[in-house]
Image (cartoon, rainbow, N blue to C red; front, side, top):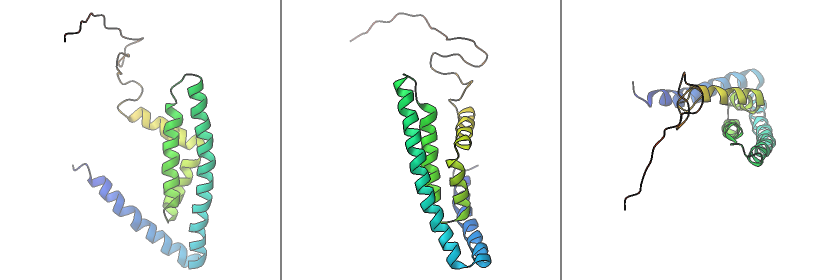
Amino acid sequence: MNLYAPWLLLFLLIPLLEIYVLIKVGGIIGAIPTIALIVFSAVLGSLLVRYQGFYTLARVRESMERGEVPALPMLEGALLLLGGFLLLLPGFITDVAGLLMLVPWVRRRLVLWFLRHSAGGPGAPGPGGPGPGERGPRTIEGDYHRED
């Protein structure tokens, strides 16, 4: 299977669905209210992204001050950026997806799902760390010398 086929299908399918939904909604409530809803969702989304972005930035700073790696807040920040981008696109489907990414518990679940299903997620062997089924850190003893 071609690696790009699902992405191509996604980039073709989403705009077609958005146009279909815009036409249906425009037929029910009219063209001007539909356009007003799209503009309102973009403005509201940009304000919400700004607020949530400052909150996430504060969480990153707090994690760094405690000496922790701010991986989760940074991934949540990336989802905020994606959510803001989706809110700026005209259409109701992308607006719903963008608004869902602004909800903190939805964002956190998406980040945890991504970490579980990515190659570097929990249970995957890391450099010098335990592999699946192992407990505790794994240390490899050895000596080295530099040759010039």
